[in-house]
Image (tube, rainbow, N blue to C red; front, side, top):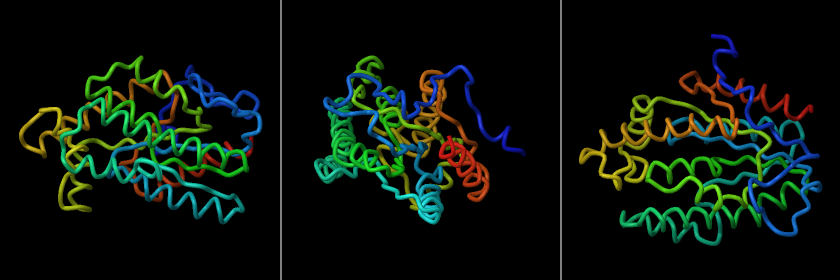
Length: 247
């Protein structure tokens, strides 16, 4: 397959922001001088087992090997609530609203204290998932999309977003091979889709995939077929990012 059949885009989607028109999705963070954010923000989305972490690790090595300073962020990495969120999830009893606000707080803390300062210093920020995963998860759980867009109006538009798309059937095999088990929340067990975790995982991930493809029409991110080899996917990402850096 050539690269044109491996990447899917909308040509009429939202334009990727340049330094001259960088913007927040909504109200943003007060006092931030957007024109001073000279770095690049790159988000890599995808379910557990899609190869996100592997690809980001490779991108970091490649970027830093070419003289670019990088910073990494991701879900449940804030110093403010990450430990509390992990502990709360162990009980498997969080309501959808509490879960949503926990993750939103985690994101907001990293945005204000890591992402924006790093971009202001000219770093390339690599996000191991961004607001799209959070919104998709919440919408699958029945949260109102307009409420979520308002909640994440503080988010800065990335310079590039890649969604590593893998079928639910392949994801379940990859997760079993890596962890020998499935995660309660990544299987959507709180939704009552099925009493069987394997079956629930397939149904939940199919719903997540549908929402990601639907959101592409709004946010214009790039969908990459991640059924391919690690090297093939990495080559696609590097080509796309290299083009971004030479603009």
